[in-house]
Length: 342
Image 1 (tube, rainbow, N blue to C red):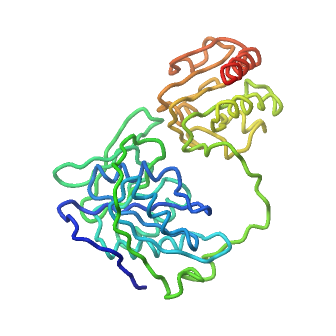
Image 2: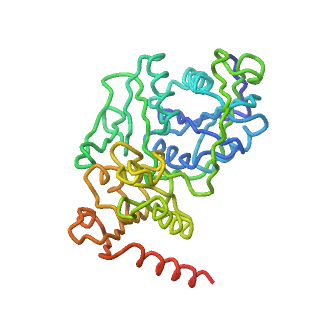
Image 3: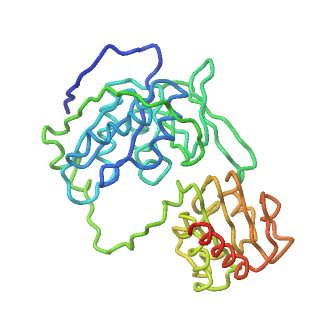
């Protein structure tokens, strides 16, 4: 593994390096969590991005990282046509680790991010703070914040020594870093530009089943989420939540009861055993609001609930509540939205 440094000016080394893994979509765009990850890193030290991009996309991704606040960016490119597992990403992050000696590493708290964090922890003998909802620095170093017991309490953790690896919950941090002109440094892996990913052939996977594409925002990072519950009555009734989500350009979620009843896919489940979301607006349709569901959405900035039961627990945490039939309320709301959009 070699590193080629490009246009490297004299850098300010007064702040510790905070390494940030920035996932890149096949289009070359950074994942939506990039600004949040770099914003959190900027509160701790100097944000240093790490990118593994499709061939020809690395430079654009590095520029985008600079717009999100990265002061320095390590890039590598791959020419693999299939989908990469996490081994190649681990190698890129590990190379950047060796080059910077970071005080902390931030990765998204998604499936790939947690895998990278675990592998990096084993390789470096470092501590992990998982599903973190905030960070700060005290006189002894980096401190991670955790939301626990169904978001009923906030706790803190910190390593006793060494580098802390953090998986950051998407939507939990509002800090954003100012745009920067990053120093871009190119990592060349295996001397072949990743014609084959580092590691073994098991680094590549091919999908044999098609996955239905969705134009809706990713549930974890959506600014607005519409969720449907068992109160919608059927799989056909659940489509009402989808119609409102599409009208609002929102992500679509579901309660566990709706998923268990077969109204929605498990990937849409919001709650303690599903996805945790922190949108600006969360709309719950026909959801009673059991504590397990609240654990996955009660940190939303604004919560709107529609339910026929005035005693439903969801009203205890809702900012706005409508006691009524969703099949009467939501069509009127959709009509109003369409009228305003004309």
